[in-house]
Amino acid sequence: MRRYKITFAYDGTKFAGFQKQPKQRTVEGVLTKLVNRMAKNPTQEIGVYGSGRTDAGVHALAQVAHFDFPFDIPAENMLKGLNSMCPLDIEILKVKIAEPNFHARYDVTGKKYLYKISLGQFTDPFKRFYTAHWRFPMDFEKMEIAIQDFVGKHDFSSFVASGAKPGSRVRTVFSVKAINDQVNHEIHFEFYGDGFMYNQIRIMTAVLVEIGMGKRPIHDIQRLLKVKDRQEARLTMPAEGLYLKQVYYPGDDPEHSEKKHHD
Image (tube, rainbow, N blue to C red; front, side, top):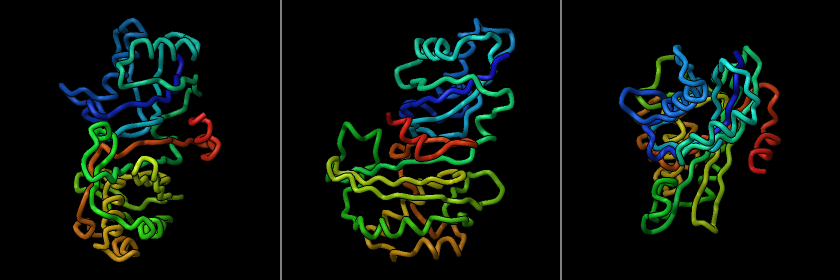
């Protein structure tokens, strides 16, 4: 058996999320079928294990998964073979033969997410599945200052949806970035941390939007971190603006890894 690590991108629009679900089209479900087809449909199904879940409508620029394959196929051939069968909304970007103990989920040291907001007065038909739309004026400088309050190790209870798994709400955000893309008339937010919970990025972004609109004080995030009350955060931004941008593992240099991906 060979363990393969795959890095892949997908358009989440027509998927009911990443995780396999009965009678639903999911990313994990599609990849599982492809891998088993590559293995000539073995009697025991080959499982595909992702770095984590994404919800329905959420996209990925570089998601990671692993699987154990019964035949020794060169990584390049596996890349070509899987891509020859992929639907148009999934692309395998990289394939690597991994160490036998590598685990796509449990070995993760960090993840980077991107959230895009289109600022047009009306919904752009070519962006409607790939950005959130917000036509109300926002003060970018306020949001640029406010987003830094997320950095550090905090209890993010105020920023987690009620459907999240039980357990600690403490996470560490390593860095954040607010980008004013004036060419495309969009605002982007990047969040890089050791992990994020159910709807956390979408709730964090919604709070930033309200700060930009003047509906919250610039440093209201500090208060929300202290009160640990989801109701105080209020809104959740739409799924279509969210992208899993990068997954990091031990030994990865974030800046080097990101540059390599864009190259």
